Length: 289
Image (tube, rainbow, N blue to C red; front, side, top):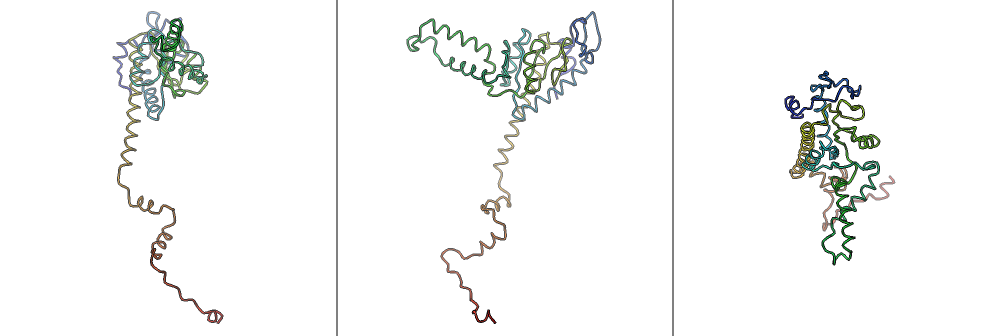
């Protein structure tokens, strides 16, 4: 369960929505009241939905999933980058490139290009065999790719889920995730459509403190999932170190998988180096009689 209080959310301004004239009617169920022309978000409902989103992210990561943090607006960039980096998850804090999910193979090639450029020494003019101008252009290319793709450089496959700040701003990211059936956890303000995401969190997506608070909380969910994942791995390792039960030893001794009766017969058979006792044959005449 998420560790967050109503007081923390109020202090961070999570409850402030947009002006009433800018609202989306689909957010009506999450609006508590109107005050001075501003919609006030019902934080009691937000808390319940935060718990659902937290548990989903935790379980996703615990089962070897990856969560992509997305927030390119100024109020979200630092929080997205810092919190995703803290829990070793991919992130996009600059411009979302079209096809980042739906055309992932092409994006992967661009990431490969970035890694290739990072291995170059742009100060070694003589050793590179390139002119200063060529090195300058390559350095600029590297810097551009770093800004665009640096946060997903270690993302080897499409993510298991997205955490998004401001689904209006990140409409393309949400659309691509929906096309691929990737669940989306997102902060939804009073001017958004909550039906576009799988796990909506009604909240102010413009207040820096509010965005930082909730982004950190989702990163905590990732951290809990990683702990649970490592705990499962430790239990499996511990189980492999335990002494074998008697039935397991017997199973290993019967490597050919023959039934127990056959194994007993095999054990009673003459050992190597000992002559077998000949059986007395019944004369053919007696058999005829």
